Image 1 (cartoon, rainbow, N blue to C red):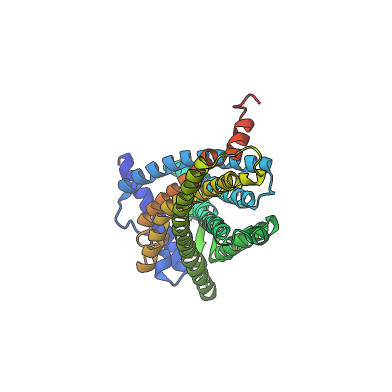
Image 2 (cartoon, one colour):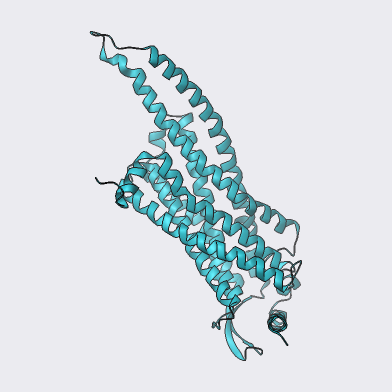
Amino acid sequence: MNSTEEEIANFSAVTEGRLQIWNNQSKDPSVYISATGFLNDRQFGIISLVFVSISQICSVIAVVSNSLSITVFARLGFSEPSNISLVALAASDLACAVLLIWANSCFLLSSMDVRIPFDATNVSFLTGSMPWAFISRTVAWITAFISFERCLCILVPLKVKKLITSKSTLTAMIIIFLFTVCPGIIGFIRYRFTLVFYPYLNTTILDAVPVDNEYIIQIDYIITVICGFIQPLLAFFIVLMYTIFLIVQLRKLSSWRKSVTSANSQWQHKPGENPALNSPPTQDRSFRKEESLVRMVVAIATIFIVSYTPTCIMLLCSTIFNEFFFFGVYKRMFIVCGMATFLAQTISGGVNILIYYYMASKFRSALRCLLRLDRQ
C-alpha cells in the first residue's frame, strides 16, 4: 500500500469513527454526515494547502500592520472620536488575524501528519474559525459606524460634534462588540469537547462533537440565523448604502472645491482691506480636510465591500443548500469557500494601514516617527 492509499485509508477510518460517535449522540442526520462532496482527497488537500499557506502569510502581515496602526493612533490620542473607531477596527482585524494564524497552524500540522493531541479540523473550527466569524461581524459593524459617522458630518455638520463625541463613540464600540461577539459565546453550547479513541492512531485525542439536545439545537439555530445570516448581511448592505451616499457627496464636494479654488485664484488681498476677507481660503482648507476624510472612509468601505462579498455569497448558499455547512454533505466545499473568505478579509484588514498612510497626514507623520524614518 503506497502513501496515497494509506492517507485515504486513514481518512476513511477517521470519518467512520466520527460517524459512529455522532450517530450515538445525535438524532439529526445533517449533524453527523461527513462526505467528500465535489472534492476528492487530493483536490481538497492541494486547494486547502494553497489557501492556508497564502492566508498564513497574509495573517502575519495583518498582525504587524494592525499592531502598528493601534500604536500610532494611541500616540495621536483619542481627542478625535474617529481615532477611537479606527483603533477598534484595527483591534478587531488584529484579533481575526491571530485566530486565523491558530486555525491555519492546526491545519498545517494536520497536513504534515504531525501527531497532535487533538483533532485539528474540529477543534480549530471551534477555537479559531468560529470565533473569527463572530469577530469579523464586529469589523463589519464598526465599518458601518465609521461610514455613518462620516455621513452625519455631511448631513448635519453643525451638530455632528455634539452627536459624535469620544464618549459616544466608545459607547458605540462597546455595544457593537456585545452585539456581535456575545451571541457567539452562547453558540458554543451546541458543541462539547470530548476524548475520542481512534483505532488507526491507536490513541485517544481531544475532539469536538455536537450536543444532542433539541432545546440547545433550537437556540443554536436562532443564533445562527441572527448572527450568521442577518447580522453580516445587514451590515454589508448598510456599508454599501452609506458608501454610495458618500461617493455622491464626494463628487459634489470636489465640484464645489474646484469652483471655490477658481474663485480664490481671482481673489487678491489689497492693502487696507479687512483681514476677514481671508475667509474663502480658510473655507477651502476646511473642505479639503473634509474631502480627504471622506475619501479615506470611502476607500476603507470599498475594500470592505469587495472583501466581504464572498462571505455574503457563502451565507446565501448555506441558506439555500441545507447540506452546505461544516458538518454537512458538502463540508469540503464549505471549508474551501470559508478559506477563501478568510483570505479576502485578512487582506482587507492588512491593507488599511496603507490607506491611513497615504490619506492621513498626521498618521503618516506619526508612523514615520515611530519607525524612525524621519530624522526629526
